[in-house]
Length: 265
Image (cartoon, rainbow, N blue to C red; front, side, top):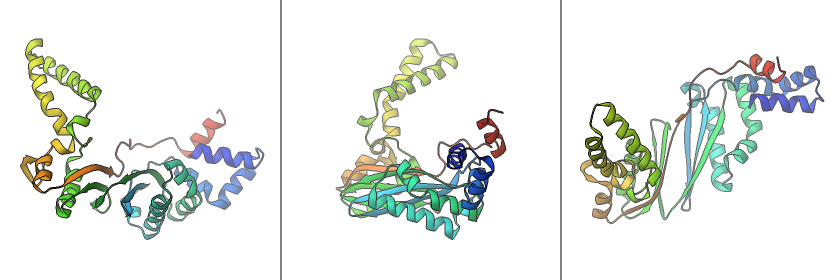
């Protein structure tokens, strides 16, 4: 984003670097561009839902302190409200709030980023925010309210990747099998023994990564599908977002280094 901001400013000033810098200073974009090289891995998951539809938005900042700041939370909630009402993709959502984001970066002094948005629909939606908005879960389904609420907490704790064991793609199973075979062989097991061991493990694997096959966190002797059946309930889909997941937290190049790189120096 730093490079994009600099390039845009240069285009608007017909290549005049001094004018571009002045214009960026006036708009707050210079401060925002300088902050853009800082990894924003803290923040909040905001959930908004209405009429059988929910939007989950991750808005990032650099420190947990700012994640609790009123101005930051107002911004994040405004982003989520718009997401629910208009259901834009993340790039359109970012563009819609870019001016407000730049102003907020200038005010707060940290990099702020609208990282992602996802949507879910269902007959009944139950939501759960964990640890002050660090993890957000929405479960869609039908049946008993308490059961669906408990499933939100289960999804938060157990991080299933799929809904049902039958939904786990064969390539995911094959990849895991190859990893487990390597581990077994590296432990010195003969090939035929390793194959038998891993085949047994793989019978459990699909259940471990799929919601309905996992042991229920509140009653581990039963799997989730059994809990749902006992309570005449069902889950049709779910979403779990965690702040910063998948990010590499490391210092990027400085603002000066990025500008120098753009100039070919």
